[in-house]
Image (cartoon, rainbow over all chains, first blue to last red; front, side, top):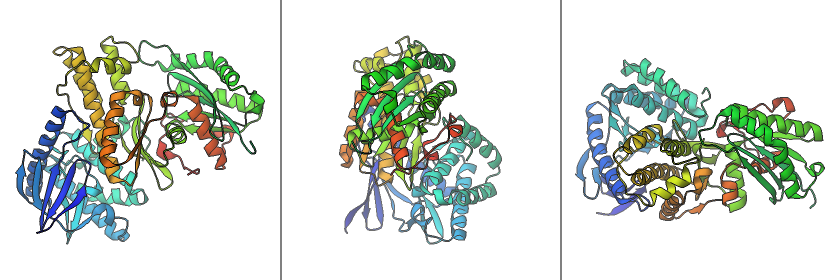
Length: 206
Length: 327
């Protein structure tokens, strides 16, 4: 079986062994040891836990086969699809809206179950066959607070503004449509989102 | 030199009044910085008063040092925002006065972009991912598709504000950065809240936790933990932005960039990724007039013009609101 490093993210190296992905949170020389160890361990545990919670809530995620808290490595099945950030610019307008609505839908399901993703950007979502898989839950949390849910939405909105500025409006509208359909408390989160935005240092109406 | 123009820039977004003069070949002729003496946080009206009282002397000093006459200046520029309204207006009114008096073109420029452009000029960095950290700003900015885009930023207070407020509440003096840096060297690390939200950061909760923790920990230990925590957060989001995009350079600018520990951490991180790391020299790291003057030249040479009635200040002027015609 061949081993191949398929990604070097900011915090982890990702290896592919056949159909298995190994995601290893590597140590960083710039962090002092105590902080380095606690961040890697906490995020590894969190990611493993939140991925299984998310799947139970009806949001597709890879299935975890092993977690090693010594090397801070998670083993999961490989989703051989296309990342949403690469997909959005090349699909038709209708498909784009549908994708975003589905992403909103998934996010609504997470929030209905008080799961916070924590890094909701289009590079953390993979389309495979007819499903969109959510990955990278390392910054996530379990929380009932409107603030945490509002920040989750803000992160997605800002990702649209920085990476997909050409279609930010249609994408955002699609997202909200899907989100509102499955999450009954959506209005309160959207109101909170506005408050969070206004708290920012250079808020201008977007 | 043939076709060379000279620009005078006025910086006045916060407690620093700066007047700088630079030529279009990138030669700094003078860089005069007048800081409002402070023992507390900035009071916008008092800072504006300081700028108004010191404006003509500072402009005069800048001209004197540069050895040129006001008549030899070809362009006036000023910091249009983001910043404190009263301070911005003093800079704007002074710039308009000079421009009308000498019949010169005037340009209001974005303060954050000015930091980046003067950094590019002086370090030789071509297309950096910039971490901009100061008392009022905390952003990760990169150039993409015609604009400087913000990839991450603080959701509440700026990192320099977090350090300064902590130092002030512990009576360590103002500005607090250098004192906290010194004390941190003697301290040991303990856990403080670590708040990274995607590419964004939050410092207000850490500030409260740090102040609270002084009841149980030595001040040196709190300084060390505060620095390690907030700098690790900054380096982490910079690293994440680096992993996302296609930049091969990282630049550190703003007042907090003077901190040696932050420089060291970024230097280690960039080495791990095999990318170049740049920090401009101290004279242009903090707020200054030269960077405003230089961005004025870049915009002017790109054919950008502003009518005097369009030179209003913009307190919440975002870097991504500017069309970049000069790159």
